[in-house]
Image (cartoon, rainbow, N blue to C red; front, side, top):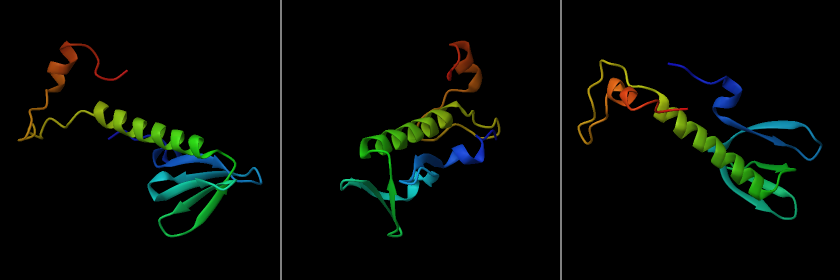
Length: 103
């Protein structure tokens, strides 16, 4: 299985108020608020204050999720796995006859 570099696979890059970089696992975010600084509250209750706006944080999480979903769509199933019972998944050869599935 091909995987992206570790630092890009589960984190978004943010900046603390003292300008140090922070790599945050966006799956751990409970909520983000601006009061007036941007405060990220994690699932464990820890709070992080960052320079980015709430909108910036949301955009980065969306972009991360978009990249995960597009990557999942680009990974072909191994030949030994049968198509899903619920819905037929086109074989790799059928998809390739119509052109590339992923850019």
